[in-house]
Amino acid sequence: MDGRSPLTKALQQKLTEQRPRPQSAIDEPGLKDLVEWAEKAPPGDFVEVGVFRGGSAWFLYALCKEQGRTLYLFDTFEGMPFRDEIDVVPVGYFNGVSCDYIDALYPEAQIYKGIFPGTLPRDLYGLAFVHVDCDQYRSIKACIDFLVPRMVPGGIMYFDDYLNMPGAKQAVDEGLQGVESFNHRGVWVKNGV
Image (tube, rainbow, N blue to C red; front, side, top):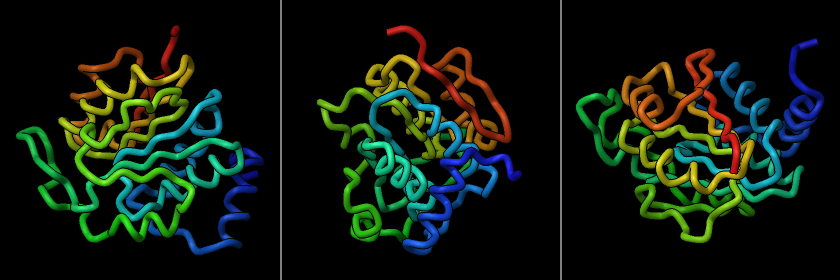
């Protein structure tokens, strides 16, 4: 047994048969963790901030289709828009993937191009799972500030770079209590209403 849930195994097989998976900057154990947490999400929609090549969105998109959810994808599609002193990744890094390419991969997803939170729809609420993969302090802080109030009770916020990037860790630690860390990642579950 490889430790994956039956749904994860079925999704992997189904997706591999349908089309090749786009590359991800996230390693395989990280993608496995991401999917396992997403599978635990309560009813509601999914968000990913920091799409890059669409490698992690590939799994989230399939899971959303399987479960009747909507996936919202946010990215500049021009690389990192800024860099504060605490950040490691330079401005412009993670560039080279077009919004049109991601739109072709995920035609049923809602895709927003630009700097988050400026592209956040005012009526987007009921979020069950949020994948924050935007590496920089200011971007992660914006995700916490603007998305946590839009999450359902039991909603899950998954931070890909929690222990890898000092800006990510600082933003999460300042903005949230009770973050569980593992494998360089962090997960927070919204309690209450």
